[in-house]
Image (cartoon, rainbow, N blue to C red):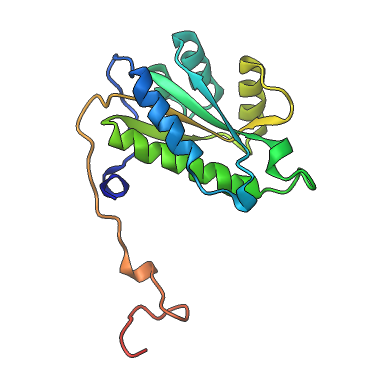
Length: 178
């Protein structure tokens, strides 16, 4: 459980590749995510070529750190598995968010750093990524995770805020007295 409290967004990386076995464990963590109706609609892109990482950095003003990353992982939805009866059904967004978070936690466990880059539903980013990496129309990039060895210490923070916890009814901030 410590990875939950240690994970932070890391945006600066050492020029050092990430070992393939670590990438595989991170991917396995993504596959272990919960999924609505157990559809498991995800597929994952692994990107390590410097030219491709530079292209990702150019696809979003918030992805500039991808240039320094050792790798990028892109959880994508196979919309045909998201909900065959109603492909527009977006429960898959929750599935892919869970997979992304699982991967970020495993990145921390591996002694690496990473940052979640928002991709879907930004049509410009989705289109640019899909074209660059040859995704067929039924595969949609949900997020991109830039990762690598952190260039410096990762700052921990306690983010618990009891003012945002409500017991039973909104506005009740104490468990005491029922």
